[in-house]
Length: 334
Image (cartoon, rainbow, N blue to C red; front, side):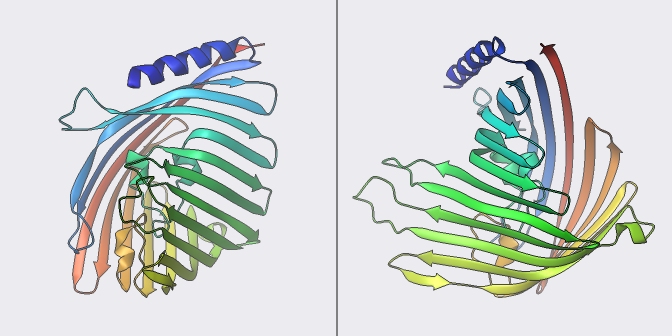
């Protein structure tokens, strides 16, 4: 199967070059080490340690239209199946102008969703599910941006249930103040095997915040504070009706030169979010991140972080290091 993906992507890229106004390539390398010393029953202590490289070719069909074709190749260190690394295609069309940005296909996830709060989607997705498989539509101007996406995660079969995410996130700026929204809904439907007893599950999370960007009023390179509500939605049809757990959430982020500090506090009802950070199943949770970027440029960034997780009666810790290298260059232009 991986050989077929490579041959197909190669054939498509070769065919497109004859029609393109410009062609080039991108290389995205990610190295990650994530050691999670978790203690609570609904969390799993583990170490995520590996690399991924994602080369792709792009072909511009005029000013606004671009087609991408490439591949993700990644593997955790120590993986026993050395002949079967994680391989995913990069195949998508992109339309972009001053305000609109639309993509459909197997779309790299990182740049689109890197700022998504962990209460909405777990950052583990970046390691093991590098693509959004579906569509993304974004609109932005100087004071407003909003993004809508659908990510199809499982196609219905005899053994697999139909599953997908649909969500939106954005921000409205008014001077130094802003309003942000992050919403996602997960639909877990049935398989095509009628002999298995299954129930459709609808699960969602919405976060609404008011905040202030005080970066230009202090000596800090960045300083933002915000607070708002986190509202969950959960239902298993024929088992129980809709439940809406709610809570308050607040975040402060500051950065100065190579150092950063971020603190997020949640207090409220337990969230039932199978795709988000499992710590939000606690009624009270505080996460403190201390970061250091030893090097950062337009092509490469390395970030080391220590995270402390505070829940009633427990303190857990996490250490992460990520290194991302980006390179892009055109090799053909009409």
